[in-house]
Length: 130
Length: 227
Image 1 (cartoon, rainbow over the protein chains, first blue to last red):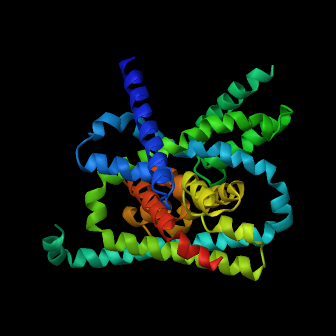
Image 2: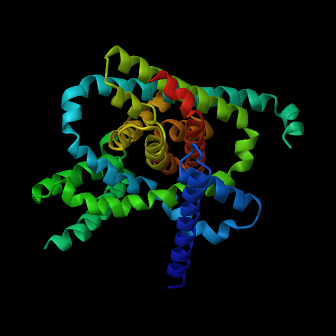
Image 3: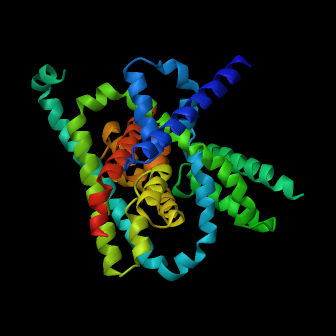
């Protein structure tokens, strides 16, 4: 019961930070969506120790772990887009597939190659890392 | 009777996701990834129950509402892994920027070669970042947010279906590199997939998704020049 209460309080806290993010984005006409501002805000609160990770860990851990779940309803909305796939199906599949595959390869391969190099030079970089 | 449709839809979504996760844990194949499995199952059940998307819509709005706080919650993996991300900042940022540039360039080039319409290009521009950020950008700069969301989802679902085996074949085994790619190119769905590989991979992917979202948000005025 206590756990559930803590979870709900944490969830409300995340909702408030999210709303605050939207408010700030609106107030300052920022070119970044409110939820991203909320995320940056939470990071700053954690980094400055205003908030402790333990205070929001349950709710945030749950939301991040089950992030895929929250996408399912949007995915269901594909059932209304039959026309799009009838009209542009093949070029669209080709565009999405090819850009995805090469994006993945380039991104992962770059990180892997550069990190290995980093490990070789670790003695040098370790001194500068702070 | 109609009052029951929304709780029924929500329950159906939770159940399909729960079963999808169980099946994927036992039989990890492209067609059993939880979101793909749940989507197909739910659409079939809705159709069999004589319901259409309008009936499902209220349930969608309730569940999607939590994507806002879920995005905010990404600050936690970002914070927890800040040391390793700072340590490998240069490889990570290089991988993210190059990956995003390649995926967008290829998408725009192919789409323009097929002379796909402008609203499709606008959707493609945000396809690699998580839905709430993609929709946020679309609302700010114009475009059809349903189309944006659809491309984001298709990219995520395709990514979780194709990427794991593809990276195995290409000998990309380093969890940090896999995590960055999952988060950068396939956002939340990629992150969920990464989390199935290991907690660390998932955390890195979560951080990469967050940073990719920020990068695209900040550079969108530049990206929109190419549309």
